[in-house]
Image 1: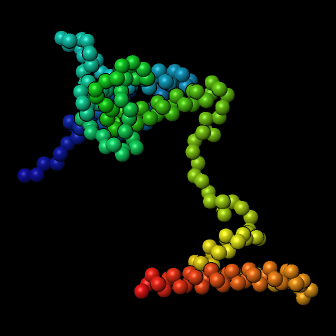
Image 2 (image 1 turned 90 degrees about the vertical axis):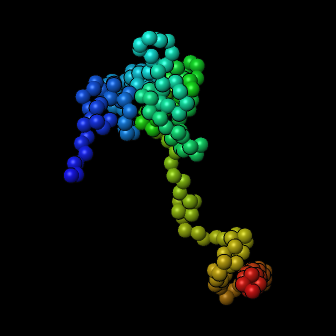
Image 3 (image 1 turned 90 degrees about the horizontal axis):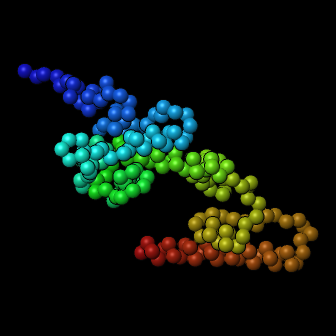
Length: 209
């Protein structure tokens, strides 16, 4: 007979009744660390306490409990990082931000908390120098053509590139009192446009054969 599985032995259930600091140090899914304090420097101390490597508590009190390859030095969860993973953390240090490097790593949960600590460090550094931290957050670049006003002039390079892709560009209509010099410039521009379009058509036909 089928029995519905229970969540009694799940990591979330096991850590639900632990103190807040132990909940964030325990293994589990990724979540944002919530601070007790409102001051950034005190927040940095709190988040360091979460990421401090777990020490041995029994016979051998010296050393770290999970200082093994592909094991999280905080909770002991096994995790193998890909070289291209954007969340891949740096090598853990025994004092989080300084000290000697360890053989272990961080799991996904504590790697996310480590990224949160790095952002907090940058915010503190910006505040110390009187800078606005939000100004250093990268913003999506908008193409220049969407920022500029309507295009009223085109360079020779722009005209050739547009006509080669199929655009039909005609010079503006001039007044009846057009001088000979202006007429010569207009005719030369028309010849260049037509030549560029003709070359484009010939190349397309040759590539299609």
